[in-house]
Each structure stands twice: as C-alpha cells, then as structure tokens.
Length: 313
Ligand code: FES
Image (cartoon, rainbow, N blue to C red; front, side):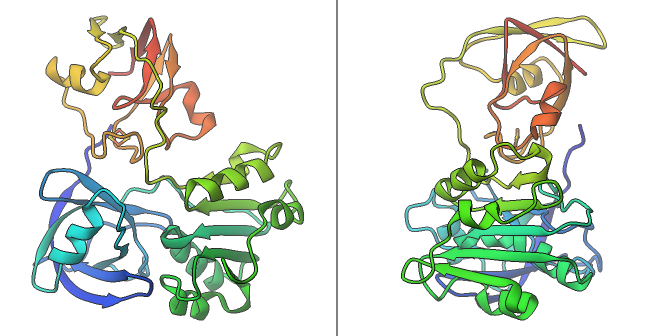
C-alpha cells in the first residue's frame, strides 16, 4: 500500500467545455513538474467537507507542468461539482492528489473500442489521443443527450472519422450491434458512463475474456440491501487477530489498532486502500478491482470477509 501525495495546486485556467462542463487547469505554485500519469488516470480533488471527487486527466501527459480536468455541473449530483463550479476560478487553490490509474490502456495489436456516455468521456479522451498518435486501430462511440456534448470539439480534432456521436435525437448507440462486429479474440473495450450504458456493454461482451473489457466507475455501486456481518482480520506479519464489527469497515478498525493505511474515496471506487489477502473468503464490494485481482487483493474500505481473512500487513 502506498499513500498518495496530496498537493495544494493553483487554478491557472478555466474555460467552458460544452454542456455545462468546465475545463480546469491546475499548476503547482512553485514546482515545474507534477507527478507523471498515463492515459486513463485520474486525480482526486478534495472538497471543503473532506470528501473527494475523482476527475480523469484530459491533458497531454507529455506536458509535465499542468493537470487538466473537465467537470460537469451535475444538478442532481452530490454537490461536489457545484462547489467546484462556484469556487474554483483562476487564482484559487485546491487540494489535488497525485494521479492514479485504475483504467490503463493495455498494449495490444487489435482494435480498441472506446465507449463513453456523457462526461464519462474524460478518461477516454486521453486514451484516444494516445491511440491516434500511434496510428492505432481504434474507434470512439460517444453517447450524449444532445449535439453539444462535453469536449466535443477536442474529440473531433483528435479522432476525426473515428468518432461516432450518438444522440437521443440521432443515431442511438446499440451495444450489441457495435460489439457484435468486433473480434473478441483481438479487440479491447474501454467503457465509462452511466449504469445503463455499462450494463449494455457488459451484456454485449458476455463470454468475452474479462481482461479484454474494461470499465471505469466513479460512482459507488454498493448494494443497499447488503447485510454486513462481523468478521476477523488476522495480520499476516504478526498473527494478531482483530474483530471487525458489522457496522465498521476493516479500514477504520485497523487504523484504530495503529495501522497507518492510505485511503481516499472510502467508497470502493478509487483503489487507494487496496491490500493483499490470503486464507479467507472475501466479499468484494468495490467497483475498482479486476476479476483476476480479486483472488488475492481486496479494498479495506468496503469489502468484508466471510468469518475471517488474513491480510498482508
Ligand atoms: S479508499 Fe477508495 S477504494 Fe478504498
């Protein structure tokens, strides 16, 4: 586990990016370079109440001095985007973490299919730029309610004819039709957008190798009917066993017992609290770990165990 650096960055630019979205540019007050990142990476922006919101980096990773994000004002959201729209203007500062990439592009020789819904296009923008620069075989399907979708001008400039815009009043996105034309043995699919879109992509790729289909989730998808039970955590290095009550997270109780553990979202979406485990049946409740990683990794903020688990601490 590694803690993420948190930096106080200056807002040095802000401009409209379509459909109630702003593009924000952050720079360190005195350093010329910021921690590096790769397409698909996000940063966490801390709100005044201590909560965080994750935003994908949409700039050019070769430009080391700034981070660029796009923030859509969500009228029915949890208030974070409203604060950012109201408060972050040039000359102000925000606490921003070093980037983390839970949604990296996999190197491969086949076609890459990017599928975005609304502001979910942000992680795919930097991927599209990287794929276009290396003249890779890719296509971007972008679903939007209107023709004025966020970041559309930039996407058109990057993708050209590889961009397919699907709007409510125009050509609708049909996941089964689009993905039915791909070769599952060579294509890689990356999807970010609302639940309905990701569900349709999951359904259309059922039977594909799970490592060929990638999702970026920014909202927790926790089952509200889940009934938590207490369980025991054994510390691999010492053999100490710690009881986790039904109403507490392993992350909280381990911290209370002196373990210094990183976290950020505490909702199972950012990947900060990932920990190795062995000897136990884990109930995975996060939205970030890949299936193949769930055999021996867990998110301490939301995941639990049946009866007991031994963690690599
Ligand atoms: S703190 Fe974000 S996944 Fe656990």
